[in-house]
Image (cartoon, rainbow, N blue to C red; front, side):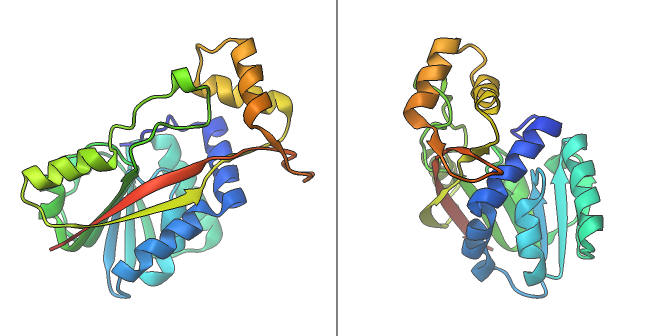
Length: 232
């Protein structure tokens, strides 16, 4: 399952943001201590696989799974171009998995059958979720509540009697932009009901000029996360 509707536009913006901010590099540093060189890892809801690229040198094998055909085909192509031999991709639902893994990773994935996931974990389950805030990259009144926020996962784990550790962290994951029109379209994509005045006011209050030629504008966003680790 993927929470983003992946297409050429959304994947391009996502990759721009990942590379510009170093978000996935920083997030991977939090996950690597829980991995061992011989581990098999399954990334459920992998999207474009940015975390998998960072984690691949630290494990034996990664199976990256997502329901989006576009995301999987893009990841498959990028893995081949990079010559990475230990990332394998599969399109499908988490429920279709039959094998077990040393580590199962879910990053900003949404709600899932935790009991079913844990049955396939041999060593650890790592779940990364939002800290409970709404997204901040478009006008306030259009922001949606996170469905996999820390308090929700805590309640779920506690109700199932699952013991876990929780680390809170925060990384910059804003959106770099090439033109003012690009900025307007980005906000409109996330808040399609916003009118032109709302969009202009939001960008005037929040968008920064970077002085860079490639991305002259930037919408900052500090993404707050909770990293749950369940030891099996």
